[in-house]
Length: 94
Image (tube, rainbow, N blue to C red; front, side):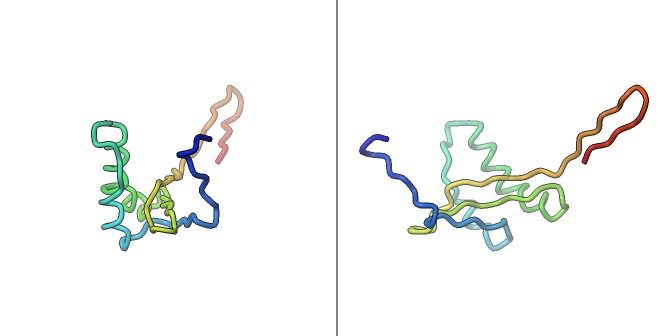
């Protein structure tokens, strides 16, 4: 770790499931606007994350840094299934 890096204490993190009340916060989520992948991830967060959650497709967890209540990231868990078709029996693993 360099002298400029600082460890974040886990007690300073807060995780919340995305809700409508987060709409203004996520619009201000800081990304590198010159990086198309980061812009696409922000667009998903703003336009699709809550809609997908309400449809039961995914759940998005917002990560906040408590000392200044900054949104520092998010994780979206997607609901999906893997189906394996064997030669004898159909096997489904959910």
